[in-house]
Length: 369
Image (cartoon, rainbow, N blue to C red; front, side, top):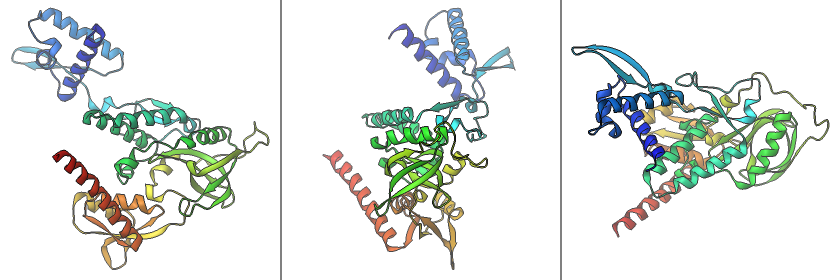
């Protein structure tokens, strides 16, 4: 290892030791926890090394704190890091950061954390890189890559609970390559507040028709980009999957003058976080019913979702646009929650269960050989 690598390893070991001791660790404790501080080295030399490491880490923004403690042997110093201060920067889209309303920031842990803004194409590269990293034959690295993908989808407007309804493949699906150019065109129109005209393919039927929309924001959800804005003809707020948009043309009249204003009460993050994967799209929603079969902590959270079914307090009704996403979400409860109607929901659920079982059966048989 080079000298730089050695220092980096020492820093990582030190941070890990401090984070594991919420009430603090003395330097004597750290000598047994950080390999570089152990051994037969001179105690004074090691103490100077620790002080340098501590100062350099603080200079990088890592909040190493110290607390004095009275003991039988006199005054000792305990060093610690508050876990709540170790959050990564809050992520946002550059297009969204130009609006007058700042991005929604959860209160816990993020109060003093700066925002890191990504251009749409930059975010696309990051997601593709994380997806490739997940394919590395190393469980720890794959887990970390999946965690990074969850942070991206969470901070950009879709909660972890929503992502849980997707299969492992779909939850980490990267944006369609064909959508990248469209995202740039729509993003530019959003910045200039220009209306866009486009041809849109319906998610359910595949039929195409011409649309006109006033972009209010771009949202990334479950591996897809969505344009959120006012449908000019319908005069209502709609979500359009970018990959289903073609021949996107911003209004060329008065290019330096805005065509519309985004309503002051529109909150992109709040709007996106209210949408579950099965609610996305512009198809007519269909009512679907599920039933809670076993009372567990996870299954009982379903009672706070949807609406009550008449005559059965264990059944809940949902308005669903994407039956595949809804069926995967139901399957995540491992039989504690099951579909009731319509028949196509039950058929989709059984199909997903069968295909998932086949995957794990194949893995078990391959491992056995």
